[in-house]
Image (cartoon, rainbow, N blue to C red):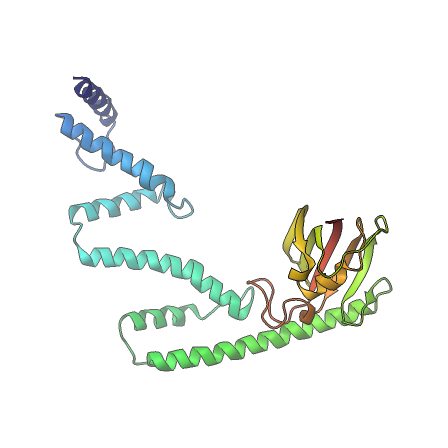
Length: 282
């Protein structure tokens, strides 16, 4: 009896809500089944989908287009052609806003990108088995060869810029160069106490920059690390410091991330600048 009363109450609320009309289709509220159907559909939209949608893509305006697409699918959910179109559209958005941008940046650097029309044409031809321009094997060999060429050219450019930067720094009065090629300048001196060893656990604050000043990593609160597990420039440089000292290190590639680089920010062959404060030695 209680369940029926609850359903009737829900139905009454739903009938009131439907009076405004949404323009998405005819709503009838003749019985409990009608009410439950409407309310569960609404619940699914709010709880499962709406909060998960990217509002960079779907806002209050484009939501109407989303609803139109949903209604067309609801009329014939087995329409494979429309399903394929929808999947193609979704994958196209993802490909061109994520993979295309990331690969372009990785190969050419910031501000440059692939020939967009050729990229799209190559993608579509492969999906349609159109090998009139080149076979997949030819495309694979060509892309691998050109990728290696571009990466090599990029490495030469980054290495040359890094070397020029380090040579200029070496001439500055406050900068000290060690036998390994590490360079540093003292920003602040601490207590002058013991210094860590190559295997010490320490706490540090730091900021990492590329030679153009771009910050790629930073920690304003102390973090713990072991000097045996960091780049060579850090292992050597922190052994020069006492607690409270703050140094700026100019680290050549061979004492940093070398020919492998690190992530999208640190290119192969890149020199790095780190400002490091030694907080404690454990």
